[in-house]
Image 1 (cartoon, rainbow, N blue to C red):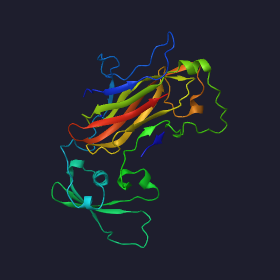
Image 2: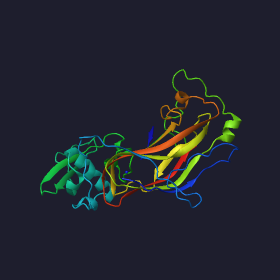
Image 3: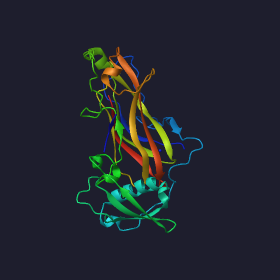
Image 4: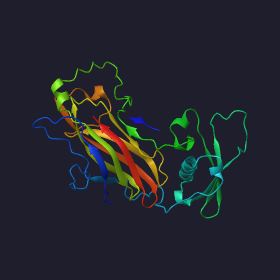
Length: 293
């Protein structure tokens, strides 16, 4: 799955189901809470997975401005990303981080291959801790505290320009057959322009987005994005990831050849799962451009 750089829920959707209807063929289910004719539909099912008996990694906080001089040397988003990384290193709730400052390397080297950033972290109890953020190699491309402008890593099986490993050819794989013309005509895409998900709890949550019908089980695109690549009012232990599974059962679609050619159209369900570590009251996760086709 590719990676790019939450309690009842109310989903506000602008949904468009692409494709022409075929006689006698049921349309895919749009995400619950959407309205295509002004009618109110039932709420979606939301699955929680919070380990019993285990502490929540960070607390649910009130509005949390960070003190310190970090903002004079880095973007506000990167300062927050580094403060969150520091909280994780120190095994402390994010709300215990009161201030953050970037300080000089205490032991300068000619070349710092780890591309380290040295931090002085002020805690809510008045004490201070030294934390080092290491960003070796290409970390700046995928680790938020290493990015100049952090983005939440998200996962999806296949983007609009391909990729994601979906079309990678395993050893000894046989060619994928051509799509059946009738299956292509009967296929139904799921397209959601915008989905607003209020955040009300920490932990793992899965949102059922909707259903689609794929010609011969072939996924041309399975993709989405976040309206704000780094929302400052919610922090994720694991960023949102899109999974597409056959309605009749079976593993999520990850590779064209492993899933194989299916007879006719295959009915699939799309879900998005994420793990919230901390959030401010009133936070929402704004998802956009969800496409399954």
